[in-house]
Amino acid sequence: MTGPQIREITECIEEIAPLDLQEDYDNAGLLTGDRDILCTGVLCTLDITEEVIAEAVSRRCNLIVAHHPIIFRAVRQLRPSGYVRRTLIGAIKNDLALYAAHTNLDNVADGVNGEIARRLGLVDTRVLAPKSDTTGSGLIGLLPSALSPNSFLELLANRFKTGIIRHNAVPAGDVSKVAVCGGAGSFLIINALEAGADAFVTADLKYHEFFEAESQLLVCDVGHYESEQYTTDLFVDIIRRKFPNFAVLKSGVRTNPVHYFSGK
Image (tube, rainbow, N blue to C red):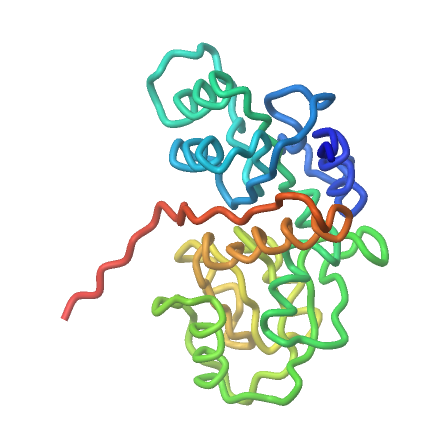
């Protein structure tokens, strides 16, 4: 039994997250490779790195599906200097197709933020900054039962597997209504406030952006990788629903470039 074409794999992702939903600055879609060749296996990851390329080769996958596009800025030459160019050279040498679903997957309710909401157990979710009923930025929903701020922070630490959560001063009252945005979501702080959220979970917040909550909202920065780590599982689920008997693998490479030191 032969496998599907690469285009069939990418099309099943685009049924969930159409490419026309990506932001203007983005570069989602097929980045390298021939969409018309047969796929030998899919390796799903958050980031494409040299280690992920080597893993795909060793596991006999000729398609890598990632959240973050490896080509984001102009690549003016393909010399083996810099991790982006070395990664691309590795992909081309090994006939690997590289595909990214980035902000188009952020902008659908069943995408990145839907997976975050599911991991937190949120119910009655809706798009935080809608473009339509089911598309737009962020999600907001309710916890099954209200939690104290400390208990909510403990929940985040547990679900996102991190001991480091940057947050503002803890407002009074319990946390019940929660807004989320995977990756860099500071642009949604005002939306979370206007929606009456008790907490906003995101990443990549700058110092002054913590002031924007004005002591009315618990703003939690769990880390970029940590907030989006379950996107890999989401890719696996999407593809396996369409191709249940095909080799759809989750990368074993932890691609987080950020490491943490806890001084005593």
